[in-house]
Amino acid sequence: MGCWLRMVTSVVVLAMVTVNPAAATDALDCSNVVRKLSPCEPFLFGAGSGGPSAECCSGAQELDKNAAGSPTEKKTLCQCLVELARSFPINYEKANQLPKLCSLTTHFTIGPATDCSK
Image (cartoon, rainbow, N blue to C red; front, side, top):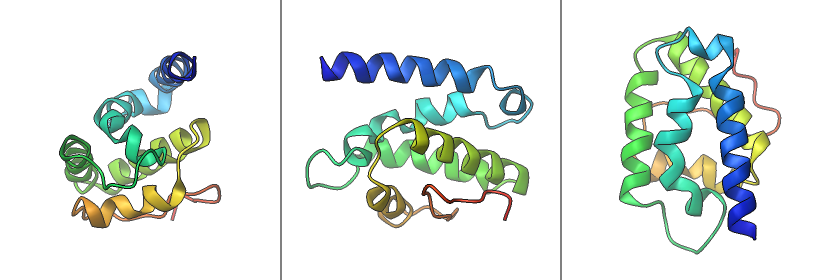
């Protein structure tokens, strides 16, 4: 039942971020963020004690490369991550370990008070 609820929630959130007009105008959009970070779900939800999978880091690195291209794309990535963090029960501590564990160059703290305009 929990897996079914998580899948339904994922579809609803994906639909919400896909129809976001602000995201639709940027090269980096939230539906792409959801797709690239889906392998990170076990790590971000705190399942198990291991680190992120190679697939997780690969998707995060692709997003990192896109975000490094411009301040607009970095802001878009930040906004998508904050929205996803509000929609899913992620472990913020683990989410904020991802840049170091996956060797990402784009850094910002994800949490309830994150301000992506800075």
